[in-house]
Image (cartoon, rainbow, N blue to C red; front, side, top):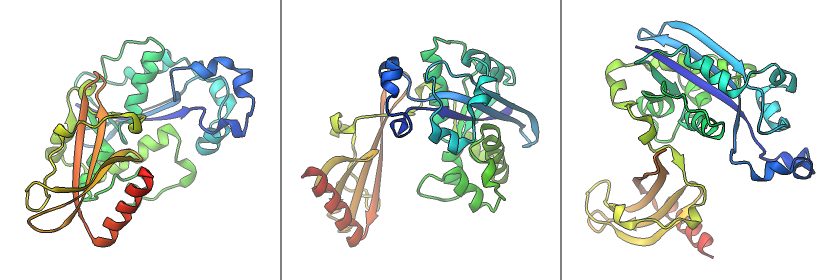
Length: 300
């Protein structure tokens, strides 16, 4: 068994009007593409179960969906048009990546986004040879829990937390980010603790975020409404409304009188099943007032 840590870089159309005001006139097909992020670079490092590096992998993917490299992406990643011209097709790149993966290996990435985009790009290209995409470990989730943090850590924050030296010029390169991720993993590797974080069926993990929360009807029957301290039913003071990436409500515990922030994150599995994650947190009066203001403002 080995660990394959994967990192990707993408090209997309976000904010591209700033640089190319007439892009949709020049490329009318871009208005109807069913792919938000086109993979343009793949990096990976393979570690054995003693955390020893076995193999590295890097390739550029020549774009076939979005013909213009977004200057903002180029600025962040330092990827140039000439780099991509030397790239391979998506199919060849993914096939080459799969050759370093053996049966029983665990695929890892910092958050699930990269795995989602591999599947999205594969669907777009009608590429179905993803049999190697089985066992999976979200190293962001694992690291955040092991390091005792409540909010998800960025890779840079995890490196700083562990006092791992960072060369900022090397960040946002797919292979370099995979190597940096491996350094975090080495520091906090625990074979026993790890087992509960490994997902055996990657297609049934809740990974796909809903895009239009304002149009989504929350199923209240799936929500517990329990006090995190007393485990008794909460009294709802403000019903759920969508704020950014999740639904938020404010409640009060009738037993301990604590103010409770109730958050529900809804995600879908790749097979289409909806999964609710409920987080109930005791908040102080100031935080409660801040959230009540946000809720009222959103409703107005």
